[in-house]
Image (cartoon, rainbow over all chains, first blue to last red):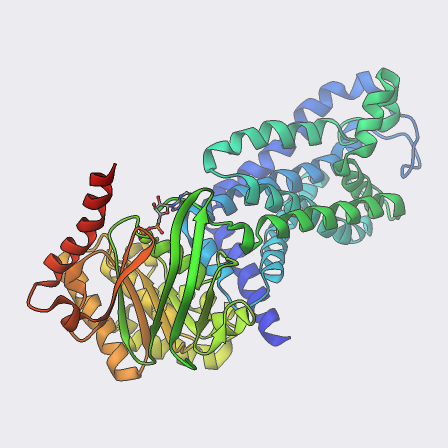
Amino acid sequence: MIPYLVALRAIVLREGLRFIHQRERFVAALVRPLVWLLVFAAGFRAALGLSIIPPYATYITYETYIVPGLCGMILLFNGMQSSLSLVYDRETGSMRLLLTAPLPRGWLLFCKLLGSTAISIVQVYTFLAIAALFGIEMNAWGYVAALPALVISGLMLGALGLALSSFIKQLENFAGVMNFVIFPMFFLSSALYPLWKMAESSPLLRDICAFNPFTHAVELIRFALYMQFNGMALLWVLLATVLFMACALWGYDPARGMVKRKG
Amino acid sequence: MIQGLSVDRVSYRYGDKVALDAVSFDVAPGRFAALLGPNGAGKSTLFSLLTRLFTTGDGRISIAGQDMGRTPRAALARMGVVFQSPTLDLDLTIRQNLSYFAALHGLSGRDARRRIDAALDRLEIRARAGEKARNLNGGHRRRTEIARALVHDPSVLLLDEPTVGLDAAARQSITEHVHRLCAEDNLTVLWATHLTDEVYDDDQLVLLHQGRILAGGTCAELRGDKSLKDYFLDLTQMPRQSTEAAL
Ligand SMILES: Nc1ncnc2c1ncn2[C@@H]1O[C@H](COP(=O)(O)OP(=O)(O)O)[C@@H](O)[C@H]1O
Ligand SMILES: [Mg+2]
């Protein structure tokens, strides 16, 4: 068991060091949700008028509503970002180093996922702290209860990125992923509007949103932030994590020749 | 063969393109074997199979007595690898790069530190352990990668064109250094190259061309009175001419 943990610590630590060396990325990743929160949300507030739905006990402002979705946004973008860096690693060769370690591939990839998730979570809490400074506060214990929800959601989105990275043949194809994965996932979810609001405009839209695993990640985080447990969301997120992880393992199976490339 | 390295009828194809065609050779323990072949011969493909980045259903590979198909992790644990493309993290120091690698092999704490110091000593770069990899020249970066490949005391060391992009002096010094490591530490070495001056007369020579082994034996015996360069050019150009003639 010990070698597994030694490797885990080193891989997570290395992700941490990388992150310290790329502080601009950290700031950029925070700017995006903060702009949504402080600029867009303010404009939408009057138009929306949110009624009381679980987990909320009273009327809430739109800013308050979108905070969990923006936490999800950080996890989503970071998951894709680390997938991008995996494709890059593969081209530069440091992925080879990782994959030739005498440990099961699944474990090595899982360590990598956990490392990037840990960093996303630091960003999420920084975001929540800034939001609190602007008066958008959650239940105090909710911040603690959200941690497991953030970990599972981060793993799910990281596993999605990992799976995608194994199928993206070249770095240049990465822009496509942005357009076809990140944006639909984010906009067709409960991050910006509750599902009932979606249903008002189109039941089909609502169904798509209800199917989107990102919706469930956001709801899991939302409920946890108010000290409530959403079992359905958890189930969805877990299922999606297992599915994405299986795709990633398949994608990185040596019999498929993952590092195939010229040179 | 119990120790050393053994490749037995290994084939690999990329789609329709055959990159390796029933490649077989053995390297005895403690031998320096040069895998010599022009660009596109299939050297890197073979390295990917030896390090299990790819697997193939055709043929068997064994490293230090461990079968790559049946006990891949035991085989990986006994080998050190220097890949053709550099794999150092340039933002980390030499020591941090080596610690990361040691941890991937389950080594930590004082044991890891001791091994890292020993590996750095072997490549004569311990004095620079605290420097960022980014600040090193190409030759020292390669030395660092070789030191890293030795941290876990492998019995087989694989190097894929380790001198690519280095100036003549650094190239010669690294070539000599690895030959010395092989002789002094009883390390089995497989050194892929397309440059004949990196192969010494006593080395075992495996000549790979268009995915096939053209010749194998001691370098001095194979080349006879020709220079290795002439021998190599004669062999690698002959089949191509004959296929061209046949077309
Ligand atoms: N990903 C790939 N897809 C298709 N062909 C490849 C790929 N990688 C290598 N090849 C081909 O396989 C042959 C062997 O390549 P390689 O093993 O890189 O040779 P070497 O390392 O000896 O230069 C070459 O003809 C090369 O073009
Ligand atoms: Mg090559």
